[in-house]
Length: 105
Length: 124
Image 1 (tube, rainbow over the protein chains, first blue to last red):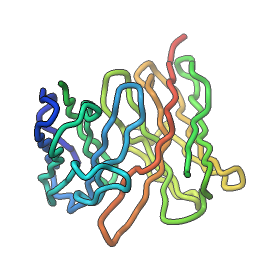
Image 2 (tube, chains in turn cyan, blue):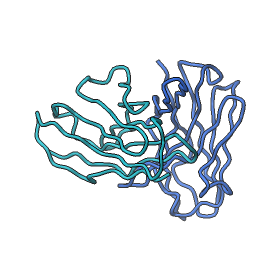
Image 3 (cartoon, each protein chain N blue to C red):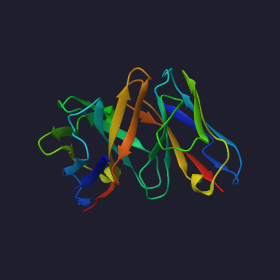
């Protein structure tokens, strides 16, 4: 299953609301997770089950969607949110990631 | 607090075998509905799931690497390992080990704990 993220990169400012999109090449139910990755670091889990906020993740992050269309929304950007974001499906093997969306200042 | 730590050579010669181990601390590798995976990331590129293993040794591999890849688990040492045969420059990447938490009720399968990653270069 191919996961296609859009846009590939986006520029925004502190305080902005941003929505990132992930499209699956076939239905994946709600078996989608979102990750944030800062340069030189391992990814951090933000959202699992398409819309469940991982423990400890700020509430400005939210996820939605099912089937083939998924979104990650950051309601008000903080400086530490500028990073690369990946979606991932686990509906069927092999587990696959999107190509990433780079969020830039 | 669960922690994962990768270990292994940082440089492997072409056609040789890449071997990495992930040591789990803070939890038993045999407990819970967890799966233990490897994910790699070439420099400047995205994430690629390589394969997973559970505490019983049951495995799933990405098709593109299935012929060269072997995952194993040692519950007595709380470790799981990766061996990738006949490596080429295309296998140069940061390799991460990660724990996947699986909850069928919520439809959730996600990597909630990651190692820091280890850079492996394939070069003569």
